[in-house]
Length: 327
Image (cartoon, rainbow, N blue to C red):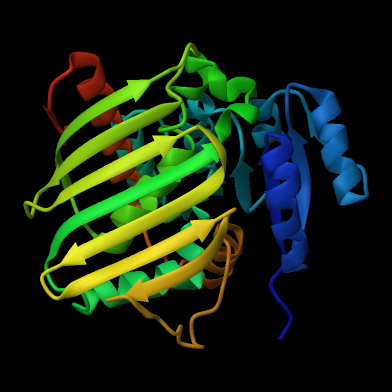
């Protein structure tokens, strides 16, 4: 049976939209791009080159949302823009995929999640690790009690993040630095896999002369009294990442290097993935949920926890003391 055809509008035509999301749209084979909005027309033209055809172009995303009739909207813009763009899209009855982080402020995350639920619309945050089989299976193992009661979590991510540059180094557009940006992947994966609820946070950040944080260390006390440490290093040679979960019955460690999962160990033994768990992408999940009327849809509640933990970490660093995570 052929796939139901879908139409989407794109807000933001930068490298991430062109290189990541365009490939996923093409891979679906039944999604039409009905419009692209970006204040810089040359960026939109580069995206059209990738699409190999002209697309309706709008310098103003609001005008595009008013003028095109689509099923969904994909958003890849500076972090500060996410809330109002996602809100406007949901209010117009469109399913939404938004790049990470969902928003900067926890209260905005709460509003978007409530709006999506009230309108029965999918709101998907583009955290790729959730669709990697190793992370999906790690979550299953934790839920099944493979490590027992979680006692501690150690996580880090390194990257030559300064090379990315651009608007990510502008606090007004980004809302934070490496911890807000790539660090958001680490937080989301840790919270999604473990199901832990952050309670108290201590943090220290180093901007190394930039306007936003480049390196940082965060200590988290969770509601079950487990302790976690999170480290983000933005001036490293390349990407490396680990998530280690220790519990009353064992330990689980995931290792990524240069954006690929290299290993997963349960009690120091290599974990064999079940063949039933297939790799996917956040875009593919959005399209599947759109076609199925949200059958099996998983609300992105973890994105609210990410926003709360992030806000608490920056507040703790500013106040130089442990702070409670706001609810």
